[in-house]
Length: 128
Image (cartoon, rainbow, N blue to C red):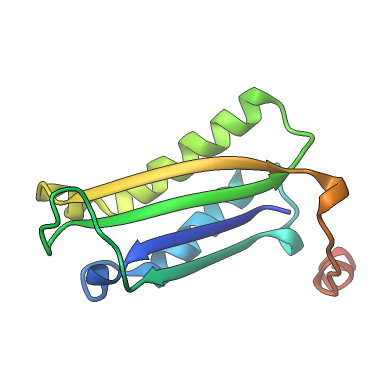
């Protein structure tokens, strides 16, 4: 159940390749060896309405929110966060060349008793 949501300010359209960012973040998650391929989801959601800091129109953000199931050590979660943050920082580096960009990442653990899933992708990928 690793689901990574990339929320970003609408003014990044045309300034950042969000599709490439999603693909790179998915690859980074798989490289940790902690997540099964059929469970990984990365999606980008555009925020059309936002207010950032001093309200300058060029202010922009990317917020990464990773939701994972329980069972990973603090070290594994930290290693995953550091790898994801490094990937995002590398791909979004040009945005840091101005004083108008913020990047954040948070990892949250899901309570299994309060999470329901049905996945037809797992059987297909496990059969390979």
